[in-house]
Image 1 (tube, protein in one colour):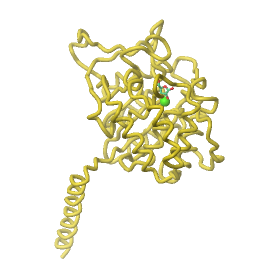
Image 2 (cartoon, rainbow, N blue to C red; image 1 turned 180 degrees about the horizontal axis):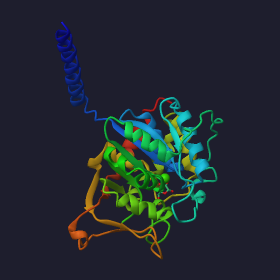
Image 3 (tube, rainbow, N blue to C red; image 1 turned 180 degrees about the vertical axis):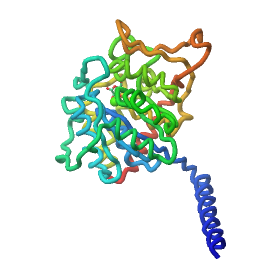
Image 4 (cartoon, rainbow, N blue to C red; image 1 turned 90 degrees about the vertical axis):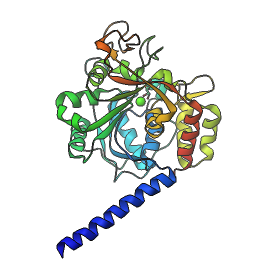
Length: 336
Ligand code: BDR
Ligand code: CA
């Protein structure tokens, strides 16, 4: 009798699995990305968090924060504001992390993101507390108890990730890959050579890039190609409350270019959702930690070092129109 029951249960499970697969094929829906999002909101971080928290394609197991665009207390407060804005305070835990880079003194980017990091919108007073443990401990706990390897998405300085790998290297077995916004193969935004996230903590970036894990790098040269157009920015408030909120933040955002504004960090999620919109080339990428070029990501384009080995899959092109279309559709479908 027991075996018969087990057989029925197994058949029902298999039927359900088959119908889910058939449904996926029919609707074109893609698999769910289980992620830990480590971030420093920050206006473009907020633009990314809005999607990560609302699109079912992303299952955010943990939101961790780091000092970067503004100080660590502010990035954590901003993450909590967004979690509450989207009503996710009971399902998405937030943990505060590193308050300064590993070795360099901390310098914020409030000249780009405003004093608070998310200016222009009157968020209610935060009711939710971050976890009572450091982001690095929270990451370890989530990774070691996950029933399948997770994707680590890094959109701030990589300090938390570097500390995690140095303190608890055993977590690497449960990380499927890392997708980072940061670095560049061209001009930087902090110096001729360095992009902000890597410049802020180059020693951490070096540890992450040498972690041996699969890494996808969406650099500044790519995010500057996929500006959210001024026409689309102007259309945001017509979409919904989220569009209004994002429009207010983006209006304060001092990172702008001809024709639009770069939503740097959003590109990590766009990559997960639409890898076909990117051209990817594998390189060995070294991080310069000191001196005039500190923070530079040097790709071995001539393939003369490391015996031809590669450590990073680097985005080398992006479909900017597809990015714009996807971003606007993502915001439009948010039910707030
Ligand atoms: C990166 O730096 C930060 O200011 C942005 O949030 C983004 O992560 C772009 O260089
Ligand atoms: Ca960021």
